[in-house]
Image (cartoon, rainbow, N blue to C red; front, top):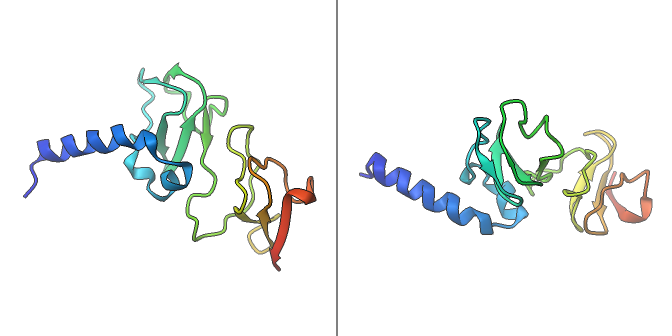
Length: 139
């Protein structure tokens, strides 16, 4: 049986090593990242946190504040957009730091609409705004 102290030690090791995970790995296991904390935590660019079951990347170093959560403070955090590679999500507008990767698939414009695959990395355009960046693969 693992003691609480041993479990906490393992958690720290996992969190410390999670910085080397790729975005693809990060979205498969957002729970390995520390939960976002709005109580004066120092975050560095590139850190990852979990918030509401999703993985977010820190875009700029800052000390957290309660009102700067990952959903509200879009200049500080970018959601990693493909949370489960087995599930095709609906396209959402990415920021400059979390565009879709080549091969990512999305429904556009809604969940019952066709599936498009990004043909370029860091794709921040919708299939209608930049058709050359997407290939229709279903529907």
